[in-house]
Image (cartoon, rainbow, N blue to C red; front, side, top):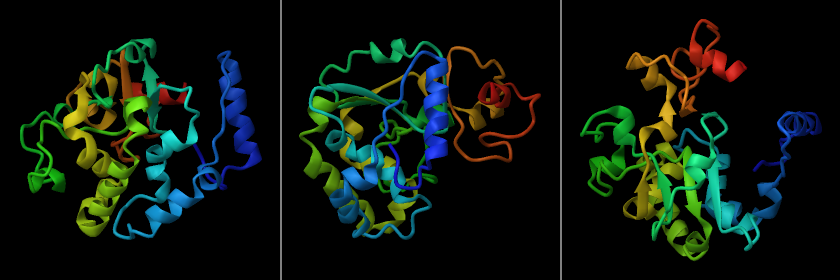
Length: 231
């Protein structure tokens, strides 16, 4: 999913990279396909968010993909999958709308209220608040929740101090009690992995959130997670 800033050169790089692994990549220009939705979302005003409207593109997936697609795996762009993705794909969602890793597993604490306003104001329980970087989604259910998502966007925009996590706050406001909780290995933040002294990079999905400076991706190639990304 991309907007009009994707250059032909970078598009060719994506095609080449996918081809090296015997795969292909399909491009969806969200700026063109969902112009009406983007206008509706941006009109709500997210000026206090640290994110751009691009972070909200995952909310438009039901409108972008054909009705023949019933289930998807969504991955942020700062993700490295270092396990067989089939393991995630085969998880049974049951009657849940999506599956995600709870943030409480990442932080290893029962109290996330200082960092997450939805939890601080008891709108979402700490144990239910999930990270939206890796999602297994039942599109058959999500397609019927367009109004729910827009109401969530309106709520987080009205109380703009919820907007710091953009789509994540919207999805949690809407679906925190309808999400299947995944084990931490399916969305392991490299910052906390380093903090906890775990330096084996095998068998997990790694999330390089937080930029550089030891949080996400750095230049030190003695670091196994930096090497995993560059390889």
